[in-house]
Length: 118
Image 1: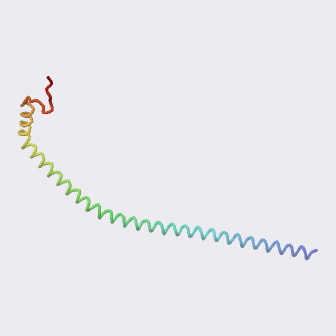
Image 2: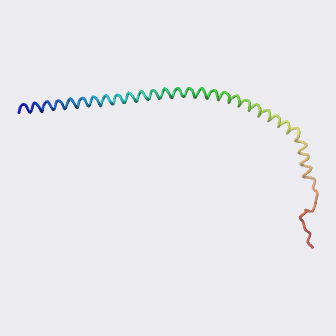
């Protein structure tokens, strides 16, 4: 009987050691997974920052040339507005005179589609 209880006791101890080893292995696995996740996040953040810097540089190059184009377009627009205002001021009197003459000069005529009925 004593040898049986001693055998059972040894089996229980072996089972306890196996459980402890399994728990340690699970803890190491969880720790390694967390560490890998942290490393991946750090690497992704580093890559994101690198790509953001490249984007900012590219955008500044493009926006720099766009602002130059925008200034050129504004300049051309102002020149065109001045030209149109000058043309308007030069022709406004003659155009108004022509329009008034056409409106006030009424010539009564019978329309070509009019049919006289007896």
